[in-house]
Amino acid sequence: MKPARRAWSAGALLLLSVVAAASAAQTPLERIIAPGERPTKLADGFTFTEGPTWLKGKLYFSDMWFKNPAAGDWAGSPARSRLIVMEPDGRYRVLAGGMQSNGTIAGRTGNLIVCDMFGHRVVEVDPASGRVLRVLLDTINGRPIDGPNDLVMDAKGGIYVTDPQFTPEEKKSQPGKQVY
Image (cartoon, rainbow, N blue to C red; front, top):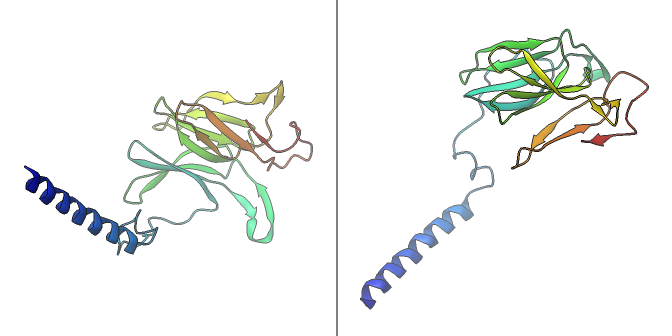
């Protein structure tokens, strides 16, 4: 019995050595993306993309319209901004318009949770129709939030939202940049 155990142990050590050597030879990127794989452009024609979320086999993201960000003109337009849904092959459609959508995440209900920056709110959106189902956050301590930007969900379903006050209004409702 002891010789078999030694043979197994030696085999396990050899396997571990090979795996360790292969891992050491890989770059950090190769540990995530297979060697030889290269990024592929799926689509273009967007203004300012933000907040990608993978949900139900599709990619959802915001295409925020700004007048001329390259020149520092960040005047936005909710009417020209879009929430996009993209198929894995790059085909896409406008899911919703009329809000300066920014960060997005998948909600526990299977719906999309979206920061509507200029609308001063975080909303739950039906990923099939683009319809706003409900407002999840729009005030703190009785005052409107300023400009929800990005959000994340913790392991227990708690949602954290950043508000860097990137909105056109000169007067802000909250006392500085916030995390809710």
